[in-house]
Length: 512
Ligand code: FAD
Ligand code: DLZ
Ligand code: SF4
Image (cartoon, rainbow, N blue to C red):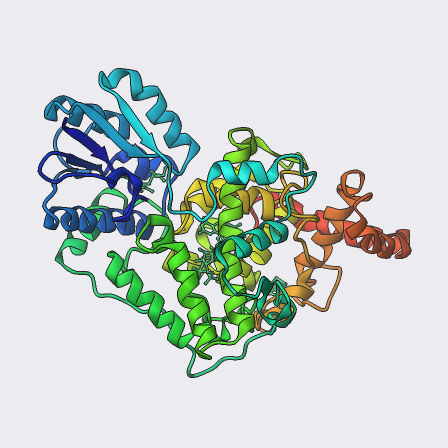
């Protein structure tokens, strides 16, 4: 029986379940670059180039293992533009008895596959994706009956399940979480580490030419392109991170510095999400760095929590709550996304920096996403769907299963508190404490109201005031609302006037 094995663009793992039991002498592999996937949101040029280059290298690696691979290139004559079209075409041409694939990571693609099933005219076997520590079913059973789905409790279960950083059944160092040690602002440092860069080989250069020709209107700079595009390169990039940055990852996890795009972050999410790296393998390597004394516990625990905790948890939430989750809009926010999310042209230096480096690198680190672009969108009442489409487009690591819960849930509180116990909002003070942006900004972070005041300061109170009926009863916000009420009517009115004036400028597309 001849199987056609269909491998998607984020399934570039030799251990993927669709390849289990595959026989190069009998089975045939299909991979397809398609316009639909490259344009359903206007992905950053670097993201498309990364996915296509990694796909082409993976196809070559499979050929080197003896497999026959049908690889549809985007500009092939006859390319049907869609995953379902390419699957149907290959089925017809290759006369396979059966199609095998691993379940897609995104709801949207799962629907595409489900609806094309009947037209295939042969059995389609969809296997579970085992590249996660927690299966969808296991997450659903953990979630069942719980009123609140807090990441911290889920994470502890994953620590126990894997034994990572566990000593005699107890968490290493006596605590599950060392976050309190991980909030240091960084200083400019001549010896700041940098992610490992790779020169594009001829195969990648062909993809870069294709992307330049076909997607020139998409957001973002294509050059310089330095991402890893093979599992071996991605492993080298991770090993380099472990040696150069992991020891200080914890201390400076929340820090932001002008011109420093990566600080002590790993920049591996794009490799992990495409399948070039394995999450458990990375956690074990990080744990090993702690055991050997190469990195302190606060750094290693912090790093492992991001992967074993947050990454697994958001995937669980996504599959538990889709498709309704994508429609959540707890605050009923409806303002369009300001243009400066695409141009970076803003006097608010923190936003200009975050968008500028996103344009350059298809990357911003977590605190920039959460506390700069995300915080601003929430405070300004931007429609969550527009915010979600922006994040999905602009980051090289963005796939809906991981991006949507982070954006709608963690960042925009659009799910009303399923993911977070309170909205992640702050005035300018948080950004001032964690970065050096404010010193060079045209706005004054210490000024609370008036045209020169940091806009975050008045927007913060405007957000809390306009959403008081939805948030006032939240015990974690009780103190904040008491402060607001104690301010008195005149001071409150000043804050609200300043915020209204700012929002009017925003609505009239004036520079802010
Ligand atoms: P590091 O800071 O070095 O962290 C190590 C790894 O932990 C990351 O590579 C990533 O795999 C994992 N991780 C860390 N935080 C999270 C998290 N909250 N959720 C899931 N995994 C996490 N991450 C994505 O992979 N894709 C997205 O589309 C995405 N969209 C986001 C949107 C918003 C609004 C926010 C607030 C966060 C988003 N994140 C997303 C999470 C996080 O910002 C990125 O994973 C991280 O910045 C990637 O950079 P890094 O590899 O240097 O991570
Ligand atoms: C992100 C992406 C892009 C840009 N292009 C392709 C493609 O041409 N072919 C493909 O198989 N996958 C692509 N992907 C990834 C998919 O959009 C999608 O995120 C995954 O298949 C997960 O469901
Ligand atoms: Fe951002 Fe306000 Fe600081 Fe300017 S002053 S960089 S707008 S936080």
